[in-house]
Amino acid sequence: MNQTIIIISLGIMCLVGIIFAGCVGSGPGNQAIQTPSPTPFVTPVIAGHIVVNESQNNALVYMNKSKVITLKLQENPTTGFQWNLTTTSGLHILNDTYEPSDTSGRLVGSGGIHQWDISTDTIGEQKIHAVYKRSWEQTTGNETTFSMTIMVV
Image (cartoon, rainbow, N blue to C red; front, top):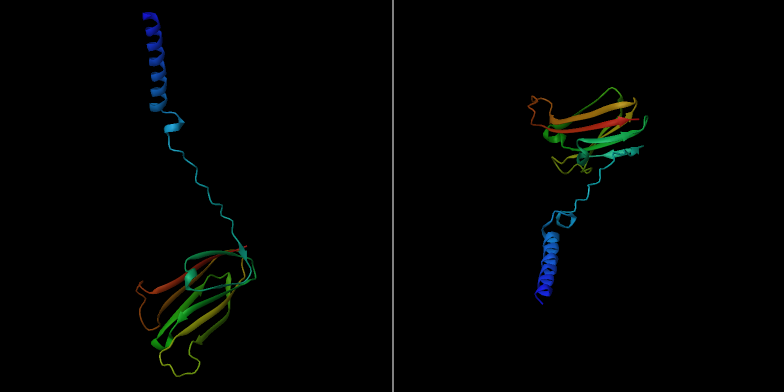
C-alpha cells in the first residue's frame, strides 16, 4: 500500500512538473506573434498629361517625355501677389495665363487661377519651383512656395 501511494505521488508530481514547465517556458506560446510589415514597392505610375494644384506641393511624379503638365495655382494679382515660376531647362512653358474667378468685373480684389502648361522635353530629373510674392518686395524665405520634381522617362 505504501508503494502504491509513493508511485501515485510520484506520478502526480511528474504531471504537475510537466504542466508547470509548459506554462512558464519560453516556447512559442508565450512570445508575441510578430508579423513582418510588408515593404512597399516603389512602382511609379508614368503619366501622360496631368493637372496639378497646391495639393501636390512637393510631389514627385513620373512622366513620359513630350507630355504636358498643367499647373493651376490660386493667385490674387489685385493685391500685388503673383507667382514667380521657374523650371529646369528640360521643361518648357507652353502657356502662361491668368483667369479671374469673377469674370463680371464687379468684385474688386477677387482672385483667380494662374495656369501654366509645361511640356516635358528632356529625360531625367526636372523641377518646377514657384514663389508667391509681390515683385517689388525682397524675398525673405517666408513666402508661400510650390515645388514639384518630375522624373521624365
